[in-house]
Image 1 (spheres, rainbow, N blue to C red):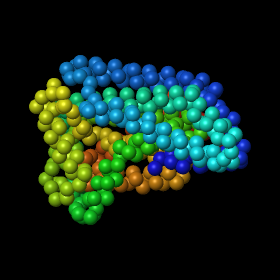
Image 2 (image 1 turned 90 degrees about the horizontal axis):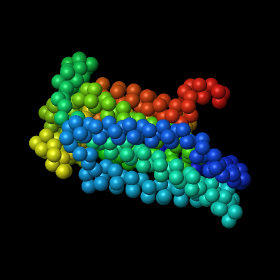
Image 3 (image 1 turned 180 degrees about the horizontal axis):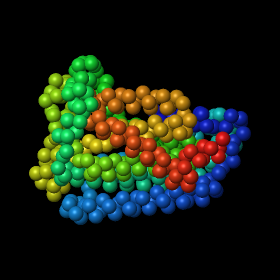
Image 4 (image 1 turned 30 degrees about the horizontal axis):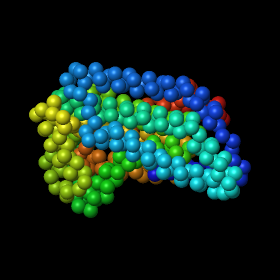
Length: 356
């Protein structure tokens, strides 16, 4: 969804191929790259220190959180890069000279090196985030007052139960489960799509760094207010929902948490439950803000529509409390702002005024 079609939108309108800018891409991005890797180092140090504190090693269960995700992202980038080159070559006149020029520009070693550095940095942040999130299970959940707060907002009623009455518990469950479950793919498509399709790799790095900060700030929010979510603290409210991929995820997370708390040292012990803030909402909001930032009108509307389904699904299935949703949006705003400053060394508002 995000950034797909960017090659068509950003390619030169004439048949003239824009000269390669690979010689300047590295120097222009150097400060941002150093800052990005400095953040990785600091967040990694925090993860290692907390690992020592809880006496649990950093884990990558079955390679799913880092090794396989990184390899998959690299392969996905390769596929999208071929599509990008093909589209640009065709629009540039589909001649031999045009093909050579496009390849030199889009697949220059400097550009590919920057892409690889960005992907590795992003996935390192992700594996640190997942481990720190797992260890939140050792803290006492504060769900009781979150449940009361939700009911106070809705006149003593559970927002999830109200949504069940409004949408029903049969037909609506399956499409909402589908949109909720594809979130992981949306994350990957957003990051890799921007790196593959955008003309200016600095803008792609704004997306990558914004994604990194969404995970980092989300980790901080988990420790600020450790919660599980309504489906874990008030399961009776969701007993009438049919079996879907999402309800299966809930059962799996319950089992994982019990196993972890029974023996945190067990090699396979790993937890994926933490509610405040909602990073399904947070990361999707980050993508939405980035599509607006990049002035991709169609993708902005598509991402906005997807965000609506995520908001509904998080409440409907009980993954999050209402404040979690607001917290996710706030994290997204902060992440995009930090990412822009990291890359351009100026605030988004000042840069927009200068451009106008």
